[in-house]
Length: 329
Image 1: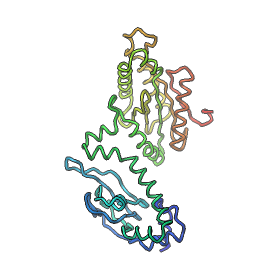
Image 2: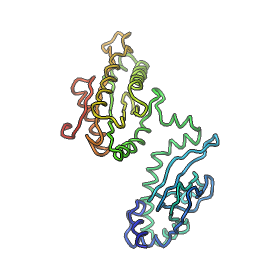
Image 3: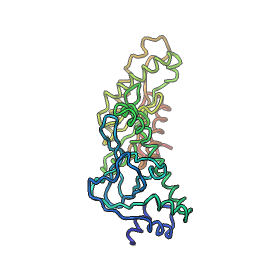
Image 4: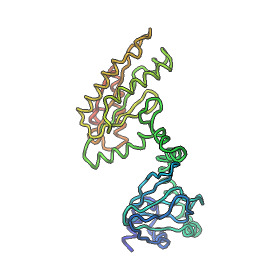
């Protein structure tokens, strides 16, 4: 019993509860052991139970219009799932299958309503945490899944790529950055984040028109693709802003690649035919490395952004790397 209590008190959904509130919830939980490959429920089934993974893991997948299925998430120890059907009184939106022999806690809908009726403060805390976690899940996957369910795999590609350039979009980058940082943390290999702006892009649009500006963006993106390998990530962050992720890249290698990109962009003749003040396309690039420059996502992004600002301050058409926070002062 103590080990179960210790587990429940450590997981996010119950993190706001007092000791006595956790013990109350415990009386409503049913422990369920499932063999690997067991189907807990299928997409379209009626749902009236929420599950919490204690040991093992559970995969969730959705059916696509072409009849195939796609795995969309894996729930591990401490994660909960199945809540949407209970509170929306709707069929299960996905199929859940245990990936291995697992131990789950099952909380029935009637038990949830009993907690709401008899211990509203406890229920409020649980619902608050559940809402935060579920909202984050939907923010990460909701639009992507909507497109994929409605239109299939081609729409999946559209949902994560920039239509003009064919590189990844901001949605993909924001959703993936945490994963790349965690993989770097576990493997011990560096991860370089590069922020890129096109120099004087607003003036290019004003001088030559937005159609020419779009052509510049497409040409620059092709240069990026030629220099960056398959395992690297190129994302258009918005307008003339791009971001690269270089997993496993050492500082010197990253600087060499980015300077080659800078030099080749400067060779583009996209603006040569125009009679205007700006004849060349150039880039400013700011680099930072995990964990050398920063040891968390927010600090890494700040360091790269500061390096980019430094490149602009120093005359643009430059590549700047910041290794420590002291350099950003």
